[in-house]
Image 1 (cartoon, rainbow, N blue to C red):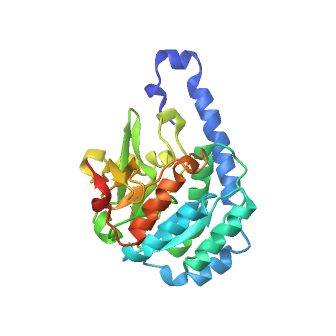
Image 2: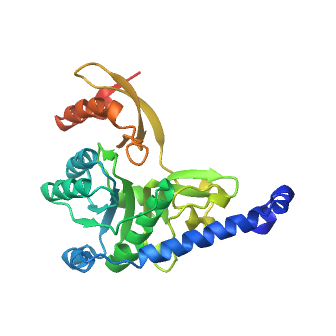
Length: 295
């Protein structure tokens, strides 16, 4: 949370620092309890993937959307050349967990169901899941580099984490705010050596107006000026699927990641599902994003 001298006089009179401190303590207690829970399959998962120590890993927090995840994994098989993807299931619905596990089996991707996450708060649920994965999996695996990738972020062109991260400690979509900055949780890359000894916390920092992962400001992000880092590019492309000719604006990151968007907790996927099905068929059939772009 913010330092006391960063609160306005009006906020101090309204005891806003106390309110923020109590919320942060509550969230930290919740985080400690959740990250202390070990799933029965964790030991086996770590043993089965022990060869990934010193390698690059991509961490996907899945949430009740098996179709989007399967598209991501299909495209990853074509375009991710130095990164192994791992799927961690944060779904509430047991049937969704079964479907997502089946997707991972079909796509030969390591899968681990996370402990049941009771919170209904969107950012808290995501931040808890990311923190659990970091503390229980990443620290155990000790990869060279790791990335958190949204389950609806589809790689549609060549991606090499070594090249994208380069010599930086982190890389992704930089979100600056008045009291700090953070990387968008859906596309954030890290050099493990740079953070191995840090108490990373992927919860949000509401006091600083920082979204999921914002609590890493105090132990990590604050050490770097965002203007001194290369950041990812996020541009809306108008894409035309070739069957019906429907055109939609779609966020494209670094000209190689297509972001479906809004398909998780606030599920707005259904109205655009048919469009993305046709777009997926075109890309799976060999079309490039540039060929589908209009305007």
